[in-house]
Image (tube, rainbow, N blue to C red; front, top):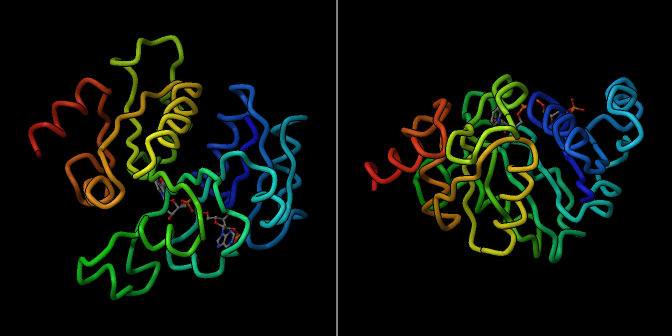
Length: 211
Ligand SMILES: NC(=O)c1ccc[n+]([C@@H]2O[C@H](COP(=O)([O-])OP(=O)(O)OC[C@H]3O[C@@H](n4cnc5c(N)ncnc54)[C@H](OP(=O)(O)O)[C@@H]3O)[C@@H](O)[C@H]2O)c1
């Protein structure tokens, strides 16, 4: 699959490594331009290229967005129509500044991003896993129930299935927390599943206990 990545830091960079290892093609971008990603794409090899943000959007069947939430307004609004977008972004006011719509609980960070990226089929995912665990804990040799869980949420079940397959390709198990709003709330910093080292089987129990 062709994956466009926006954000090449702890999560975006490691996701790129894992997707390439699993046989996918990635085009990766950041805010400073492709010339700053030369070392990373050299490490990644033939199935990776450094591009600008618009080209990452054009390239991907799936677009993986992993930037500080406070900067999502800088992203283009066009080019996303019908595209599956994975949203790993979390809200940290000390980093992102206060965002009133989130502080009063009216909406969630993923809904904000979905509104900005016109027409995107947005799936929240990869939000609750620390980047070092993302880098090291995938294991395609394990049965799904014994793999580390990566949580997803979204309103488009077909898009969620595509993202779940990508998560399985890199050695994790996708665990669905539901619709974008409700599932999104359950994946935010400070929730019972946030940064917890849960297998898929354990994750199902934690989610049931919290329901
Ligand atoms: N770190 C974790 O363990 C973890 C776990 C789960 C979720 N998250 C969430 O995932 C997101 C990324 O976290 P991270 O730790 O990977 O951050 P990071 O290491 O600071 O990397 C951020 C990346 O975003 C890029 N970026 C910033 N503004 C951009 C813009 N307007 N357009 C395009 N690219 C832009 C940066 O590019 P430049 O360097 O060129 O500016 C950089 O490549 C955050 O929302 C974070 O809360 C993090």
